[in-house]
Image 1 (cartoon, rainbow, N blue to C red):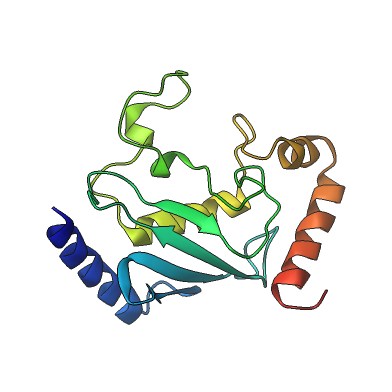
Image 2 (cartoon, one colour):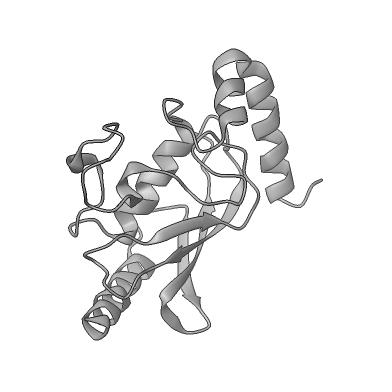
Amino acid sequence: MATSAAGLLGRQLKQMQSDKDIPGISCGLVDNNVFEWEVMLMMSDECKFYGGGFFKARLSFPKDYPMMPPKMKFETPIFHPNVYDNGEVCISILHPPEEDKYGYESAAERWSPVQSPETILLSVISMLSSPNDESPANVDAAKMWREDPKEFRRRCRKVVRESLGEE
């Protein structure tokens, strides 16, 4: 199974590296390992909270990919309701394809083998613009987003400046 996963990931990486239709996303391998990708998200100004920021992340694919989802972790610090303090991304598309024991997500919202690294990254970019504060990974960020949007935007601008090495 791992060899078919490696072949698929190699093709998906090559496709993403040659596809000019997805601006702002750059991908490469970590230590020549097709199961570990280094990702750079260069956020456009349309992303209302993180526009202009450069965020480095890692996608770690399991050996049984595409049956199971990868994990995504920001290496550049980011303050967001759906990102844990350690950088791990919490988004439905990255949750295993099983019923949610808490009844929050439907199986249709969770990982499916038809997803790809491209759909994951586009979903994460969308998530950055539209946080889901109903089941937050970062409770402080969700509370601030809801109760003090001005302070939330200020914190996000600080994160963007830090991502550019300005602070």
